[in-house]
Image 1 (cartoon, rainbow, N blue to C red):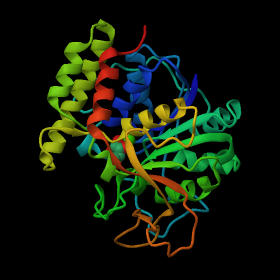
Image 2 (tube, rainbow, N blue to C red; image 1 turned 90 degrees about the vertical axis):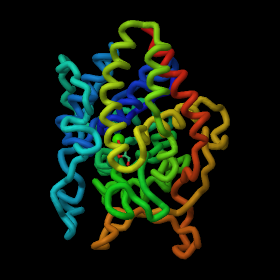
Image 3 (cartoon, protein in one colour; image 1 turned 60 degrees about the vertical axis):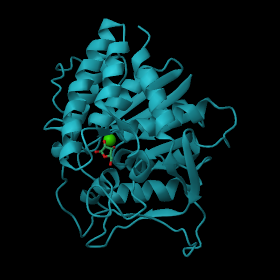
Image 4 (cartoon, rainbow, N blue to C red; image 1 turned 45 degrees about the vertical axis):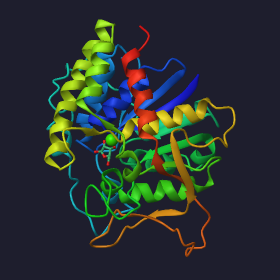
Length: 341
Ligand code: BDR
Ligand code: CA
């Protein structure tokens, strides 16, 4: 079994990732962290619990993440401090689009997301696969608790960044990094010492993963289990909001789903006995990357040193392009098959 820790901010595309996760039969979900990002932390916790319960997986612990980005906390306190902004225009007022999810019955354990990261790594030393599909706040806080985390995890995979100067938040920033630049900088710098370089999937790669209403329709009609069909119908209502958002943003009536790719790539990579295997469904390259923390126009921008000017060793395996058609085929097949009940 692949030990997995998923840190997310559901969020509609995070929900697609959660759906993909529960369909896996060779993965032990050691824990989920829910962090503030698309909506505030209390709501991402609630959404994660609801999506999991609806899928019949209330046995998976959802750990509440930090309430605020690191910049609100000493010693990171930033001069550029502004209150966190949430993405209700993109993900709906509670982060589930048009879907009305049942109120969760499970309560989160009294273990914070940062503590849960550390416990998961100690339980599976050198084996844990960590996936971050939201801001990096919890993982950065986990590094404060356990500086040896890079060595204790097998590999981390992060959805975030925009390395071609075209963002989706400020002109050059991507949402997950923009929400907590200090946390992302901390993770990118500290995980340079990991046994395998962190895999970073930026928006210029993940935006190619586009679900259309037609593909969603095929998934819904192809599913035979009534319980899973109910889950997918809720996801469909969430995606309907995402289609409308993307249409209003000039992308057409489709949904760019950024998060499921990094989770799927992490699991597929972990299945392969050779860790030097290429990142699945992708072209990638090693690069020294960092996050701008000061610029009044560019705070939160991710930068890759393509010219080697910093004289720094690569600290990330950067996904440059995703074979979206192959990956979408895999995603469709997996979601149509559903979990094993
Ligand atoms: C990222 O930001 C969020 O809105 C999505 O869930 C995804 O993780 C894309 O920039
Ligand atoms: Ca997300």
